[in-house]
Length: 382
Image (cartoon, rainbow, N blue to C red):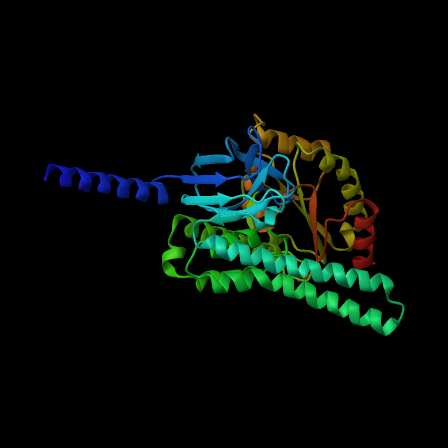
């Protein structure tokens, strides 16, 4: 009987050990086989930034053709497995899960990574991208050889269609993986692109299973989507052809002045600051333009971004700069640096920045300086 009990206890311990191996409680555990890779070779887990620059996030040493990684990550990401002396890298989605890796040192694309379901999606995703890249290489070769204009035109059209197909792949994989974290990883990757179609990505996110959206990572992606959408709406509101966002802010005297109170036949909104060297060097030119065209209907409202933490007395510096540079037009400022609500409404990331409005408040030009600024005001008022 005692022997039977001992066997049962041993079995339970083995089962418990295997369970712990399959799913670490708090982090990731990667056990790797590296046939043919010499002792002492380093294995790296690498992340990439928007410029595709790789950063080592974790390192292991091969011993007896084996290696182990243990760590923790806050949210799933696409990382790459790289090995010293082996060409290329193997992408995979890293989560706080258990992974088994079998390396192919001669062809790293054939490396097998067993783990969460999300990685199967990623493997298929990169396979599709490789196939498209192979087609692109083939088309490039045909383009170089083609002499017939009609053939060249057809090949050019094929290139356009191929690019459209590639652009559609991430959305396809988000759609097909609503129930696992790969959908969030694909979304996160798309959000890093400058030309991301935010409305399509929001629609794709909304279609993902609720249990995935409600994870910590899902909440992070949702927040990113809303932030980018808000930023793009702000950018759209200040594009040429849009009506300039209305605002009201304190003058040097402490009274409130609104944009609509300052509109002339032509109005320049001039974002600047006392601490801004390029702004101060441009001010003589703006003064010259104002003096030449004010009587013809030109108005200027200067919006100061003074209030930097480095300024001990930002209001005094602002008023002194107005006097020194002889800026005799309207001025406002919340003295909040780039956190100024007017600057945020106009999506100001650097100064000097200017917006030129017509008599209806519509933006007709922006960010003009020197002769270009004077030429545009002359065009509008002469």
